[in-house]
Length: 105
Image: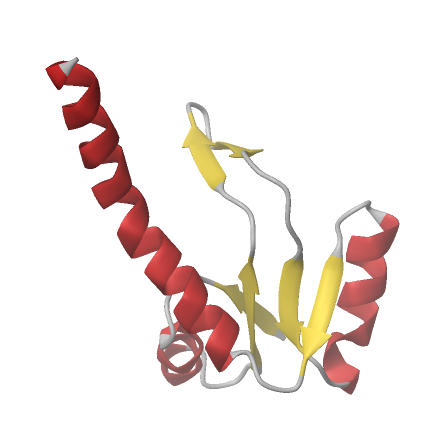
């Protein structure tokens, strides 16, 4: 099984189309992740890992919780995936507005 933790709403289907012999399980993360030099990922904010609920995912949820990562499961993730997509689309606009406001001071 593969878990698709993405910002998009179609990543699970795209991965399932490519990984024909594997089950692809949808999920998203509520926190910001920065990719740093040397393939290091840094967690920038607080939040949980949100996954579609179901029996195949239970062992992963237990392992994540034991590792100190907050995990939540939902029957339907579409609303969360769309809200995460909107946040990620708005973030660059906010940074431009903040930067432009700073320059005008």
